Amino acid sequence: MRKTIKLSLIAASVLALTACNDEAKTEKTEAVAATAQVELNTLEQQQAYAFGSSVGSFLGKDLERRKELGFDVDLKLLLRGLEDSLKGESQYDEVKVNEILTQFEASLQEKQEAQMKAEAEKNIAAGTAYLAENAKKEGVKVTESGLQYKVISLGEGAKPAAEDTVKVHYKGTLLDGTEFDSSYARNEPATFPLNRVILGWTEGLQLMPVGSKFEFTIPSDLAYGPSNKGPIPANSTLIFEVELLAIESDDAAAE
Image 1: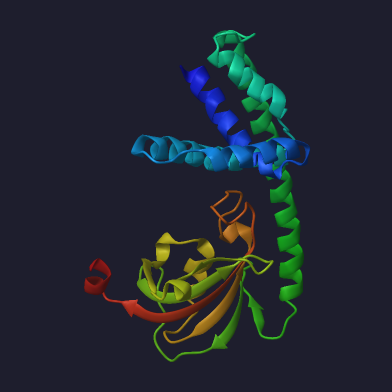
Image 2: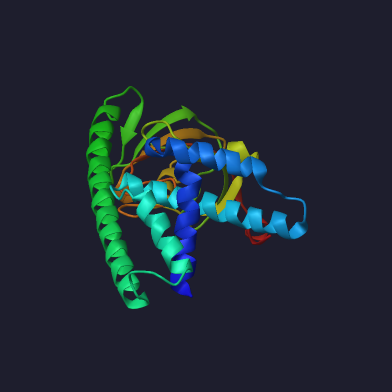
C-alpha cells in the first residue's frame, strides 16, 4: 500500500513539473489538450481533480528541490514504473523498492547536509567581513562581546534590565537586505521578557533608554549560531532596527 501511494504521489508531482521540463514539450502539449477535455461536472470529479492538483503542486516543489541537489528523475521511467505497478507487473518487489528509495533518501540527505555546511561556512566568512567594515563606520560602537550598535535616536527614559519585559517595534534583515521579520509590517509592537531572546537582543536593549531607536548588527554567535531558523540561514549575521517603546510593568507583562 505504501509503495503504491508513494509512487503515485511522485508521478503526480512529475506531471505538475512537466511544463517546466524542456525535454517534455510534447507531453506538455498533450497534457494541456487532455486537461481541456476533463469533465468536472460532478462533486466527485471535482474532488478527485482537486486532490490530484494539490498533491502535484506540493510534491512538484519537492522534486524541484531534489533537482537542485543534482537528482534529476527520468520522467519516462518514473511513469513506466507507476504504470507497471498499477497493473501488478512491477519489475521490483516491495522489498527492492524500499531498499532503493531508502538509498535515495540517504543520498539526498547527504547532499543536503553538505550544501548546508557550505552555506554556513559562506555565511561565517560574509559575516566576518561585514562586521569588520561596519565597525569602521561613523557612529558604530562595538561591545566586548562583538555586538555592534548605532544610535539612530536617543530617548530619555529608563534602561531595561535583563529580567524586564519590554515592548518594541523592530525590523530584522539579512546582510543582503532580505527582511525576515518586522513588527512594523504587522503593525503591532512585540512584547517579551528580555532574557528570553537572542543574546544580541538581551545585551543590546539594555543599552537603550526608553524612546530610543538603535541599529544592531549581531554576529551569528549572538544570534542563532549554526541553526537554521526558517528564513534565517545558519551562521547568519543579522541587522536589526529596534525602537524601545516601553518597559512593561509586571501586571502588563502578565496580561
